[in-house]
Image 1: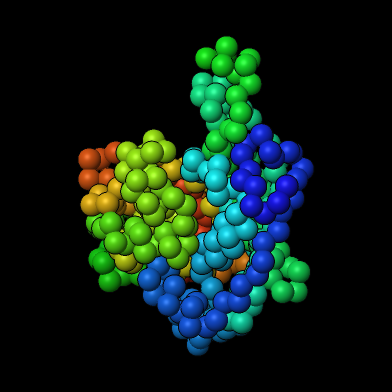
Image 2: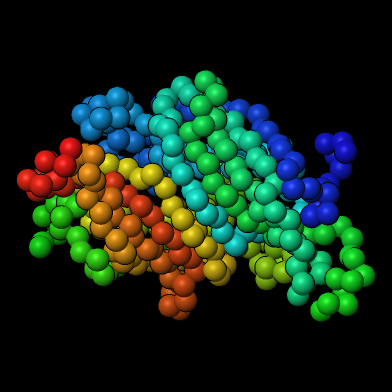
Length: 160
Length: 160
């Protein structure tokens, strides 16, 4: 399957793994994001961060989540098929992300379940892991996503 | 307790509820956020959103999460005490948020657990609910947060 072939629900298999390219988070990006969405002292104030045991400024966990998500999105793995997400579970912030760190995202398909009520779609459960440049996992989460199907199974239609 | 009194771990009780003020999400804000973090068609393209069954542009669920979090932060309920968060669970996007919607956040303390290994802190589990202007719940999540304690229990020190 080439990069140009859109993937739909039926093109995914449990166990498949994907990996994104990386992005570096600068101190300015960390500060800007914190001002807008998460102005806790350890995201905004180097001195406070050191004082509170964080050994310097750390990125908001939400920024790690969003940048990691965005990097994965850019790989165009499910862009054509996505109908949105009902939610996430087990969102875990494991290690600090610091100015100058470079993160990338890897994901594995955990479950694939065709919808019984709506034969044009299915739900994929994927586990996402975000790593820094040292190969340390800084974050993980499990996301459910609704995907369009590229074909209908006759038995799926009959089950409506 | 006045708004100026900092709250620490021991000032919270299971069952306490809090409510933030609101914020309106404009179409421009929704589009800007989507370009930066979640450029899926239904967040960026009114025509695609209508075509894919969303009846028009909808905000990224991540934007709802971040704005809801920020609104709650501004109430200064746990700003003094927060040492960060190990994670979230049961993040659920329940209803679309549309341009012109106004959201606010409510939260309830579900559990409070003092740390055995570090007597200067405890973990609070809080359930957050984000509502729109019609009183409909658009999102919910459970967040664990590490809080500083404003006093030490002698038995907590002995357990180290």
